[in-house]
Length: 523
Image (cartoon, rainbow, N blue to C red; front, side, top):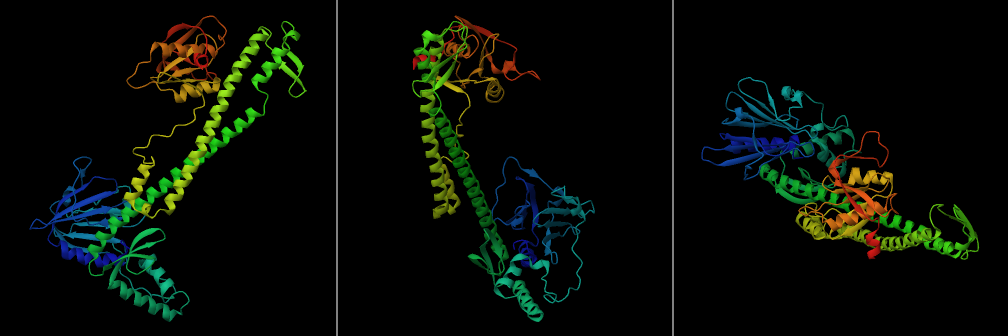
């Protein structure tokens, strides 16, 4: 009810008594949707009025002191400066507070409507009105509603809009308004109006998850304030409400973050478990290599396949062969892939353990967020958030599972694409302009990227090993020497209409290497 007519009609005479004769010393804004007016008495006493003109929480704050920022602050309404306050009034049955100045009736009107708050300054010179929110052009013609005779309150069973939600709810919940006959409704409404016009107390309450200033006791009572000091009540309420809004906002954001991380970790663990299950139940590379080596004597030159009896399952199996490759070399490649599969299985198991533990940790933090009483205070919540690495200002962005082959060499990360579409993803989405980009020259193959490290030049041995990978994961895998293009990624572009994986290199140097996977050999 801090913007309700029945509160404003108490606030207006209190402000008139306090500010009569004060002159406007400054008028500026330093935050979005904020208008600050500084007033000064003849004796040098300051009075600050800060209008919060955002749609979510329109309010008039009356801070006892205020320090203007040195930067990002802009002066507004120059014609308002030096105007002297004559009177403050509340528009009848409305959420509007008007400051009238002694200089020929210049006015500053604060329209405190929830969806569209605004400040309207009408100069004494008769010049057009000046709007704080200029998009609300109709506010230039805003005028008080004409006073008209209203039907007796409660006689029709309806309450006037000026009572707003809290008094109307108070009547229904605590005074038995709805089931009462018309005569009783009228009496109850009149009694409440008398209480609102001369409130004994102001109440700071918690109702439906919101902190509110009320003229009637509802919800959870946080504090009771004297009814003869609306300025003091407003000074107590606005900082409390803003602090609690910030608390609820941060709690909501924190809950969303924890839920998202728990969901991401659970999904990652589930996908890794599915992949591990598939690897465990399919015929492995070692299995096929063993069958191939056991039946070498049966393979005819140039054969494309070999049908044998699987000595593990006693079922017929067809082994695919390359007609231009020796069977021994095919078996060697299968054994190499089997070794890589073992590495993948180990990595999958580690990922499952790590991600399941992360999901459990996020769920435990969610439970602690709900049950820990101290986390219902903003300072404690922020300290707890920082303690668990959830502070957005300091938390390192969680690493994601990259969909590429990943190698580490002397502190540098090397990424290798898996197929044409994956090459596009690596080069177009993940690679930074300062990363080194490598590719086997004049043949199809994987894109290779060496991640840039600020302040570090990639050593030539690292470039050479990355080039070996580029040759190994290309059509030149079995060549004795392979030329490899090396260039910063900023010189690589994808022409319009090019097929997946196709790029154009605008500047390059070429290195000659023996195709290999040096990291596999080192293992």
